[in-house]
Image (cartoon, rainbow, N blue to C red; front, side, top):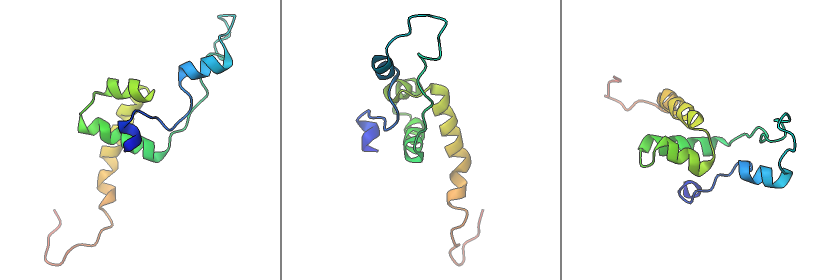
Length: 101
C-alpha cells in the first residue's frame, strides 16, 4: 500500500518513458511503433488500486493519472473486487450457536 500512497506503479514503462526510449515514429501511418507494449499488472497492484478506488479518497480519474492505468480498467478492478469479496469468507468455519444469514 505504501507504493500506492507514494504514487509508484510497479508495472511497465509509462507512455512518455516508452516514447523517450524508442523515439517518435517519422511516419504517421506507423501507429504500432508509438503504442506501448501490453502490460501485465500484479494481483497485489490491482487489489491496491481497487481498494483505493473503493475508499473514495481519490477519484478514479486521479488514480488513473497517478498510476498510468486507464480509468475503465480501474472501474473493472473495483467491480471484480466487489463481486468476489464474499468468496473470501465462504470457506470459513462457523462459530457454534451462530446462524448464517
